[in-house]
Image: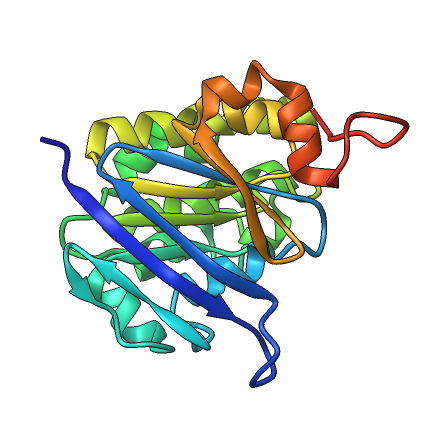
Length: 244
């Protein structure tokens, strides 16, 4: 039986008390599973991720990891439990080398630097280069590799494609899939490139105005673009469109 890694129940979050910008979100995330969180800009996707990571105290609801409730608003507790966030700004130490960034992230049970290079061979040629001198794609590889080094149980990735060409995104997403499969961890992937995300995800959750408008198997949503369009925009496909 597949193990439930994360359980989120009735989660509401916002930046002002009494003003939730994410409302009543619930899901279960199992080992070896990727869930894509989709939705238009301003839907609450990043707010959801930083709340799961303990960087924002929820207004209501609970988050459990391996059946143990995570202390609300405690990034340290969430991190120690195995929730690892790759933020959209990557948060690298730009003055340190690739090797130094990876060494600082290492935790017992996490990948080795050699294993990170196996996932991202391009970084093997850049180990002595400062993170600030890397290309955008290389910086994202380093940010993800650093998360791998932290022995995640649940990997949260916010806007992996930020500032990157689609061809780079297409090369990175299969690495996430491989890591989740090999390590039997779970991942929550926030991504604007809907088709790419659904290709690697097991299931998806769509947010609109802070509320879940639809959930389902990724393959089913990919095969029903009209359903996805309505979930995004609140109406049938027209002049507006979802980015595929």
